[in-house]
Length: 539
Ligand code: PEP
Ligand code: MG
Image 1 (cartoon, helix red, strand yellow):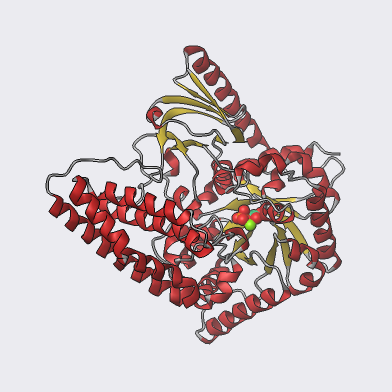
Image 2 (cartoon, rainbow, N blue to C red):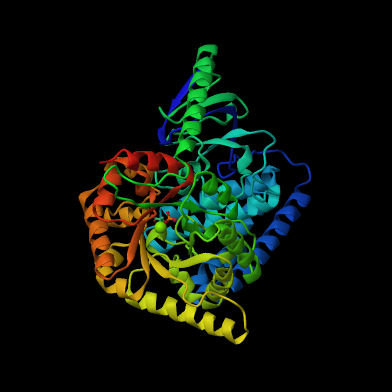
């Protein structure tokens, strides 16, 4: 039995086969080729395809983010045509009789190393471009799209790291748990594991791919992965798993009971969801509403922009299934770790501080209005609220609200039903928004505090960077003070305030949240009844 330790980000247990995920670290094998002429042609064909892809990406990027930001694709096209680069690859195929993918990969590494050692900063930055081009060419040559996200039997997923654009492609009914070599507690993989009520451990360091397909036990309590577990471990797993299921059953007795302390203070507990599929679990766990519908996951699941109708049907489904309970739809929060290829957003030095969320929506207003119209139309079928993410200024709130009003006027003119007085709120997830919450409160109906981003921005610590874990105290007094300040400012203006980041489910903070008058906590469905139990135990 092999024992691998990591950091637990969700306490649960699973047993199943390991399934290694991802092709980024793929080793390109060197093979001998007899027909070097055909191999050069194969390379030239891949080069032409790569250029075609890049030209399309360039056009889309110009339309979405402007010429200056689209320039990176132009540079890639130029590099693909560079005689030195192109010539070196052809030469290697011809003189060493190697396969094209190996020649591309080998030559690119040499070029990247040379660029990386140059004195000029601009030239040094080209190293990443060469590697990017190389990946594109290799993927074309070996016919790799992206892993499909399908596996035949329920498995524990093992990966270097997982981006939201990858996790959305999993058939979640077949995922038993997550193990990542890197990762962080507030990453979306961790959030997904909590939503799915499955164990997850991060920061294990590299695990050898030769373990692919081997039987394992994932213990999310201790943060341990046991590969080829012995009989004693399997027995221990079975006993503890039975207790885990028993506890889940016991918690069900709390359904229908109020979230009320012994002295009678109450708080709403809502669910965080990413898709209409999550509603089943929200209802089973007696959610009082949906406090955060991460609408960007609808975009992440698609190969192209979802249309107004596609979005409308999904929002309507959630609103109807929640039967009149509040459903807070957060408008698109794309960017940073949530990357969508068809948005063709340029690479950024600091994506968490970059072009994301409301900044993208206020730039591409056509796309934003498509979403707002879909939300408004769905509001006629339930109790939908709309919420804007990543706000830093009053100006952004005014502009977002003005676009919402524009959509209302258009729908009215077309005699399409919607809720005229739809409640409009904002996420408080930047220090700027928390600090000016007294100025923002009169502009909206509610606040929802996103502690995941708020913590990263207050503590200047990237939520994706696993090496910062020892430096992050998510209950840092600066974070708690700004939460309290935000709650005070909301209440001063008669507005309600919720918390929808991961801190909302931390049982050690329930008392604090109730004392400062937080009105609503929005958590992964699997946390709702545990949180209710905790609140009912408070004085
Ligand atoms: C947050 O930042 O706390 C939040 C809820 O939003 P997300 O985790 O989707 O960034
Ligand atoms: Mg956020």
